[in-house]
Image: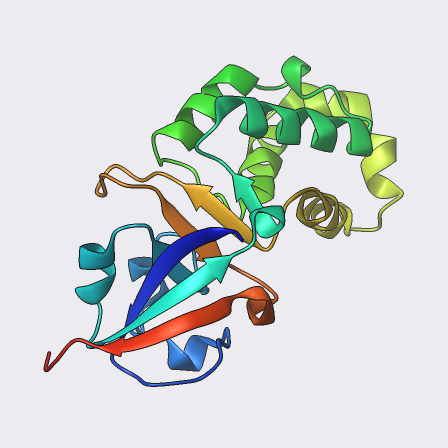
Length: 187
């Protein structure tokens, strides 16, 4: 048994699919973490997003808990180790962790934020120019692949506008087990 979380939708369905065309919002800027399946532990919050309320059994093994500073730090340090780059020479890791904790960074694309920190450092290019050239412009892709290998299909995280943590499934939606579908009435 995992965590019970809720997803509200205006649409009735029997399985989850991640597809930008199915998003409730046509403007991706309105989505905190990009396309994916957003869930919450709060029944009331989920019911605000549509008359169909999905109760989901979310296996703990699929969750990366970014409400924990320790988990965020460990993930960053593992990414650093995989890439063979000492991030501390180029940006303040504690600042990145704090930004993650208060919702200023995107959990799904933390690798992009770290890349931007590195990219802004002249010293980084002085130290790693040859290393970067060996990737033939694919360093960013390599970093993303490494990051995604470190995290589960679902992130648990906090954003300032919600009291409770949110969950986003950004890949492999078939891992979300629908326990129940309730109809809450008209929107």
